[in-house]
Image 1 (tube, one colour):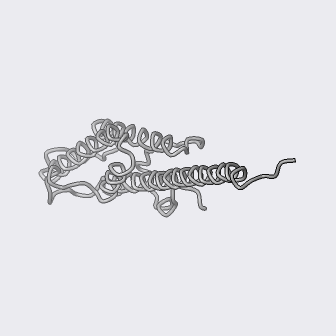
Image 2 (tube, rainbow, N blue to C red; image 1 turned 30 degrees about the horizontal axis):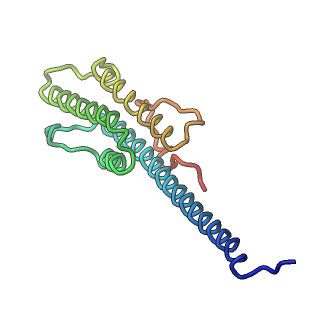
Image 3 (cartoon, rainbow, N blue to C red; image 1 turned 120 degrees about the vertical axis):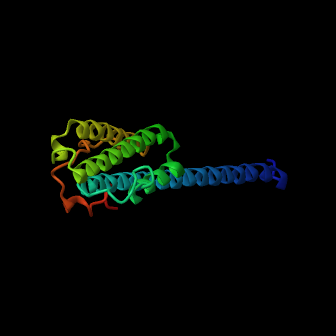
Length: 186
């Protein structure tokens, strides 16, 4: 019968140490990936909330006079600026859809500005926006861009299982949903 020497025990011990080290590295990588995905998911919900706030801003301001500023110099609302910033930091793949939204925002502001000038000069009869096909055309394109952003963002964060309702909330504005977050409570 042969006795085990220190060198015979060293090899299995080294294997156990290597296995533990590999398991630690794999656990660390998995933890970092999970943390990164959780941050991206949280950013996705923040983006959705910012876009919802922007749609509310549009509904709220559609009848507000834009007389004091040229639409090209007006800038963008804070909610839309926040959405752009979140997109830049976490979702560069949404750039094309965000560009569509920014273009429709500019067109809508231009439309509202022109309508207010016509109303001030009495050059056009007073007609509500909901009766104007040009307004609906711009809003339909804007809503399509918003809906595409919402859906794509939800896909990117892995939250595409629940049903989505279209964005359009014109003429049924309610502040009831303003305080409700887009993500489930933890």
